[in-house]
Image: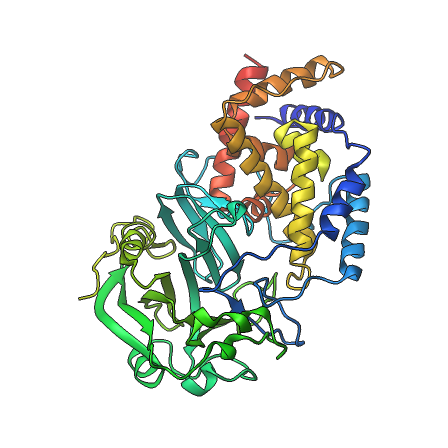
Length: 353
Length: 132
């Protein structure tokens, strides 16, 4: 390739771009969409809450109030500027060398089979292999069934086994997270609790022994070539922790989840560990909620010297088949990209004893 | 943003929809993302990729070439059809957006080396079409 060819491509692409047109109603359509009250899907089993450093909610689950009209107006203004102004350029980083189109590639990835990037929240995760850096270490995994990306933040993402658009009850999910600690029973039931859980994230035994949970099975295994512990957990039905415990938002206000009697018992069981994305700058203490009508299978995967990665499959109490599906797909194909480039150390799909 | 989306998927209505969807994504997360602009660009690219995938899955017809393109641009319009979705995205981001490989890697979620591979193969394919 030569400069004149590159310049020709650039010139003709700009001419093609000039053919773009925006409908006269674009502004109104967009403003209308932004003004629409957001429909929050029911996410009883995986509902999250969080606290940011400045006290603002950052979750988008059912506990979170809608964005203010001020933000809506600001975004609408930004939209107008962008639509009129066209493309916004990224600042170039000084340590980034120029791309030489003719340079030999350093990999031989087949673009038809290489891992994809996860879609934005609400997007469909089609069957295939995906790559994520949200966990602080690059990982890949494969799903054979279409899923929906329920949410994603530095430190975790949630895959829902349902069709959001169809408003189907959300009763199966896969949570992939770096956790900083399991919550003590006191932390798990304290609406004012801040920070990460104080039980070591690798110390599952202590967490299980001191919280209102029943561990049905536990076994050693490997995931992505790393040592791991797999365990099936459910909330102790005799627990005295009631659903009202989960009926607060991160600012302490009551939410509609206070009406969910079927969540009994309900408590917060773990906290995310750290900030992995300096660009997004999300802080650490997202908390996960565990409710009585579901069951979870955890794979706690060792990351040497760091907090573990936890894959959690959540399903109705009597649906262990979903656990096996997750074990055979997402877990079995889970790879640590940096340390397992060849993927030779496939994950064990050992089920709990 | 609409121009970028249009260059990627070459349909004005879809491009407008993609950008709207992306802004809605940003709006929903305004209080949690530090760099809305960066997130918006990533969302636009992601939505474009999804649109291209849907189009391929549905065996939709090729985008209709505008009548008023110059011959060279018209030839490129047709030549873009020979590229894979990922090759087309990388080529457009590089030569229309002016992004470097590392920036494209962040936008697409691919390793920079993969981006360079897509770029090299995409340009090779374009050269065969444009300078046979």
